[in-house]
Amino acid sequence: MDKVMEMKHITKIFPGTIANDDVTFELLKGETHVLLGENGAGKTTLMNILYGLYQPEKGDIFFNGQVSKINNPNDAIKLGIGMVHQHFMLIDKFTVTENIILGIEPKIGLKIDMKKAINDVKQLAEKYAFNIEPTAKIEDISVGQQQKVEILKALYRGADILILDEPTAVLTPQEIDELGTIIDNLKKEGKSFILITHKLKEVMKMSDRVTIIRRGKVTGTVYTKETSIDELAELMVGRKVNLTVNKSEAKIGKDMLVVENLQVKNHRGILAVKGVNLTVRAGEIVGIAGVDGNGQTELVEALTGLIKPQDGKVMLDGKDIFNKTPREISDSGVGHVPEDRQKRGLILDFSLFENSILGLYHKLPFSKGIIMKYNEIRKHSQRLISEFDVRTPSDEVTAGSLSGGNQQKLIVAREISKNPNILIAAQPTRGLDVGAIEYIHKRIVEERDKGKAVLLVSLELDEILSLSDRIAVMYDGNVVDILERKDADERKLGILMAGGTVKNDKEVRDGE
Ligand SMILES: Nc1ncnc2c1ncn2[C@@H]1O[C@H](COP(=O)(O)OP(=O)(O)O)[C@@H](O)[C@H]1O
Ligand SMILES: [Mg+2]
Image 1 (cartoon, protein in one colour):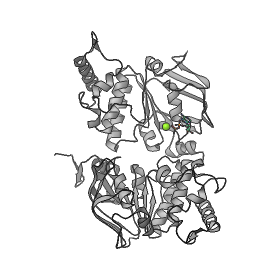
Image 2 (cartoon, helix red, strand yellow):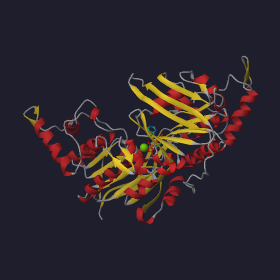
Image 3 (cartoon, protein in one colour):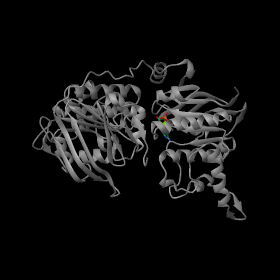
Image 4 (cartoon, helix red, strand yellow):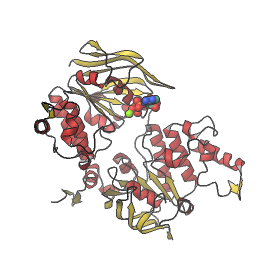
């Protein structure tokens, strides 16, 4: 196969960070080449350079053997490059067609020829078997469909090389399969793909070759057929990692958290949790699966006192904690690893020792009356740091100076140190590297084995499947089904997450 594009010896420096360090990367015609690396490895930066959004300090980009200067995205588009960013760039109030033609509208005289535009989009969508309505508004279609619009937008501009940045992060397993089919069809036409991801299973399924980046440097380029998940993980992390979670049979105890008919409005005043019933027992991990935005966030925020619920009942070990303050709920025995660790979990300008007693500072042994006992606080923080392997020069540095993985370890350490009856962990490993994920999973399972109840909310199905004893699926503000772990698999969960139902193992789509 021919090389269509080569990036040679690319170095990109941001203040304090070498995001790309002498990176060489080549793309063959008709291949799917995955760019694999942990968070912050430099993947997006490299692709932003290819798309003309950044200029490298060093290095050159070649197209069909010729050096090309890419000063801006327009230059990139002229070279046949299309990029679908991790956060879509569509205009919500515009239609599918208006978004696709934006900036290159077909015209009759001075007026936009909307009839031709709609027809063009329709034909393009049909050609690639995209099920897209050209006149639908972006705000009315699913995230999976919005992604297709982004792809069509790139194709409409004549892209031959498509860069997709973390394209599967927002999709259900079925939508991921669909994306795979779309990519295969486009490859048959000679298009080439660069997929950015940190998910190893998808790499194995979706790619022809993989280039792995660690801390800005390429650690290898391999053929997918000749590699394994374990090898890729090692190239990505720099050491062997244990990707499977070892856990024994759950020893189920009493009902710890009982939620009945809970209703919660979101920040815009719309009912986001529409009557959830859920029980979490001592000694088990209940996972909540769902596509982002189906009420999971509001459920957790209501359970932990961060937003006021409208109606319902929440009991913790027989005690009413409905609509109590975060302090009261925490004191009743709820540990909370929040979804947004930088906003809710830590005070970034405070030292680690101050952060280690957030939610605990009013208690013995850390204070007595209004006197803070700094000796005890420092002992506590240093114990957490060593026990939970928080990598830091001392407990005096600010929380903001730690990496995401170490910030998260500190939060998990603090919440577990409260010895709660239930640990509510929301997206506990989002954005973390594989090493930190491995560690946090181990500690969560340890809590369960100590007889604690654990409620885990995660957008990562792999995480839900490897940790949970039971799995509740949320869709449109409701828990639509609760499965025993042994009865759950990716396919079934995917159907439920998309609003379908599973009866006797057969899929029943909405409205059938
Ligand atoms: N615009 C920017 N300014 C400063 N630093 C940045 C910028 N973009 C990325 N970085 C830093 O460069 C490194 C690589 O980031 P990125 O390319 O986004 O990684 P990835 O996509 O692999 O997660 C990170 O340390 C990140 O903080
Ligand atoms: Mg990125």
